[in-house]
Image 1 (spheres, rainbow, N blue to C red):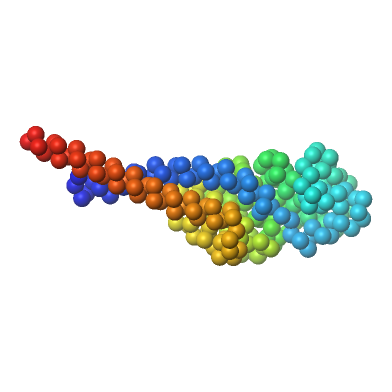
Image 2: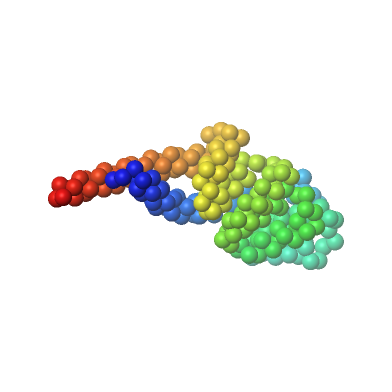
Length: 231
């Protein structure tokens, strides 16, 4: 095999491995979305005012992981019927969006996070959750922008923001950027299992791609040597 052909064949093997890597991340993000989509602590706490209110029940449903239709209804009741102050209204939209996200209702979740951001664009968690919803509806490019905005504004758990942005970048084929973000997540929270698993997958996938490329190169060299023998 000529020196000019070898890099191209290595690149083809790398691309084949990448397709499998991206498919794995798409499944991982759904689990990560639940972890990342937590309401802003100070805003969400205000929804507890009036424990029997729809806003309070909406907040408790998010905390307790209740995902039934009644939980969503309580959030809707708070938004549409209760006279919430600005911060509580943002929290109610964010909480309902979290419920939709956990129910795998990406479009509805995205609409709620957009509504929260329209009221106050400075709420970092709403942008973070919006990024998770964008990934769920298959829009990794805007998801990267949303999560980057969340990080610039500040979020309570930045390691989860870096994790989700890594998944979005990997969907876009930005393997280096994804690796850097998974690494950042692990630096912020050492020994965090989701980030450790993704970085281990990167190492394993890279090793497998290199071994496959080397095997392909050896096979091609043998074929070329056999061809030369007939000349």
